[in-house]
Image (tube, rainbow, N blue to C red; front, side, top):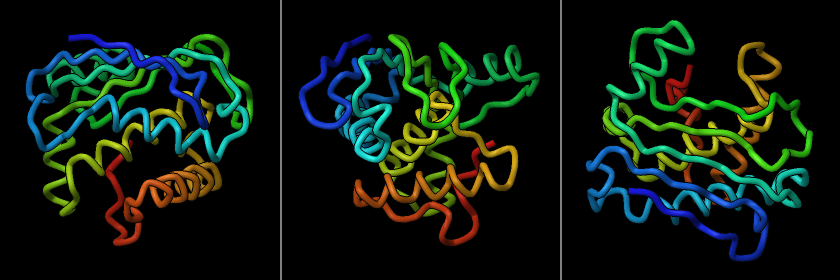
Length: 179
């Protein structure tokens, strides 16, 4: 199932979201409306980042299963395991750079998100929003390889999630297990 969300106004109004649901489990009511959650997450990131706020770009988001994400992770990152979220930027950016017409792709693994949310006692929809924010920041050039970069990215994630009314995922020290 695929749908396209046209911008509605406000921060991030120029970001068109192409949502592809590849795993039927995403239709479970616990997720609410995934497209609405993605739109809120994108708007919250755009409200904090001027380069995204004024951009006209397309974002592709795939809601997949662990098997799909495991295959992509093996192919592109040489890691033969599922992970919660993968990001593939259309163009390599540095933090603060204005994105072009294509931001890139974010792929989220449903079973991994559910397992992590359960283990960390989080609402699945909140954890999903965190991973969308995390993936979008990667598309915008943020990373967490070096400690200083990780601190900057995590601080931005925490601020954006706070704007969405979602608790700090790193507060308890167990984080979101994002690699």
